[in-house]
Image 1 (tube, rainbow, N blue to C red):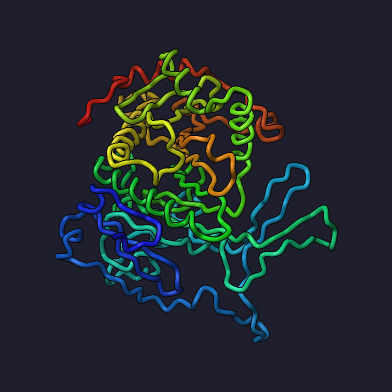
Image 2 (cartoon, rainbow, N blue to C red):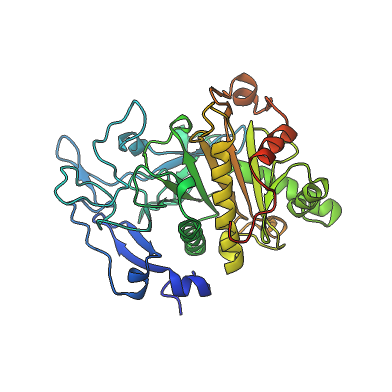
Length: 419
């Protein structure tokens, strides 16, 4: 029986991954996901006490005049032109930055604790870890106890709706090595990361008010990563995000028109065309979509039909995904030739598109990963200028077939079982 209310581990996770929950000093949830046999067996245990003198995150604070101020929940406002909800979280302006020329932090908040180090504001209580997940200290969205969930209006005008951005933001750290790259992690560690995505999808989907679970990874300074560490995030939206809403509109219309599943039929069409398939294994297929926007773009889909979310994957599919993700990151790094044959540390965004939680259109959706980079050459990036940013009308600098052809130069399409 699982110790968690909604997450049920498969046979592999039951034997090889141990999840240990605790609370950080300010009350945020924290989870160790260990694949080290000594921790899985219980021969070793993790440090659960966070020694930092942090105030409770929901406790009121005092202003400059000594007046008690209740904690301010992030808010969101709806754009009346598009219907999109826009979260606004001013506290994020104070978050530490360790990557790029604007770095402000002298230590890495995502690193394991270093006894004797003058920087002791890290998020991980222990001096080592395998994979960890915890609530973001500077969230874009947060459920604040007692905060009213009712819609109100800016300036009293019903044109401008606003609500509390009552979502949840989590961080998932893939490995304790601060200088490591996700592409260099062993498949076994990526398997633990996959389990983390499944675990948090299952648990967070049952939180009242959450409509969509979005695991994603930002990688590289050019992308805007603020913390230099192999990690990703999990956003739990209290609404359906605009891109997902657009996809649901089209997948539902396609189903009503044809009786089919659009994402299933797209995968079948790509397999039939073959040209844009970049690699595959028994449980997953990776392809460059026929209308790719980005100069490097790959979509990854499960072979089995009916999979809506990551937590619905079986053990075989979770292993297949770990292998597929490892291959994708390695070949992505080799994609651009810098002249020395070593490739580059590719900046990318890796975005999991899962079916929404409550929307009835979820049954006609299908789990997929959308991976892309705005690098268009070893020394060039694609800027989202007037057409893209102003009108969301994409102009591609290449063709999907050229992207796929480059991937075909980097390795075989069919992956070996032990690759």
